[in-house]
Figure (spheres, rainbow, N blue to C red):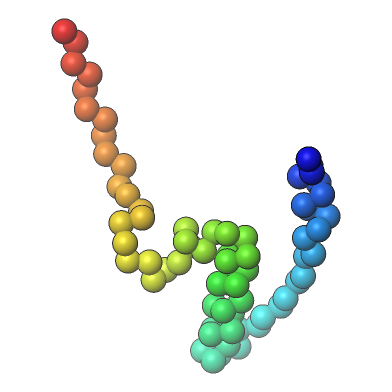
Length: 67
């Protein structure tokens, strides 16, 4: 059985600097963010284009019935 430390050691960290000088740079920045979130397995949580009902609104719980 492997420990979480084995996984951490296997992941290589890269640092990418994208300087947003004008609107043309936004596409590169967004693609980088999308790839990073996909690699981390969180893109479905941060995808701004997601249209389904994945995000639900919390509802106030109903009052319990006492019999």
